[in-house]
Image 1 (cartoon, rainbow, N blue to C red):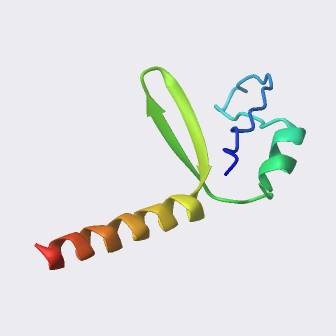
Image 2: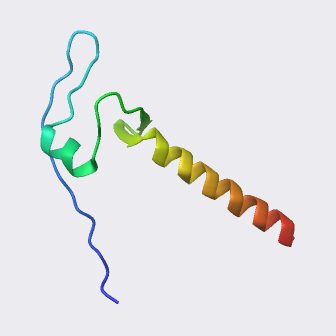
Length: 74
């Protein structure tokens, strides 16, 4: 089975007076980000990560289901 290498894109942006940051168009298109979409902002070790809130919620549900399964089997 072939391992899929992660696709990485880079872009440069700047922060406006109100703290707003524009995600470059090619990255928004690649990730299918839409106007008004809710994004989770995660800060760790001096870096910021953005992810769609829906993806974060899905990950949380899966982890919760795994926890429940683990608890039931012990």
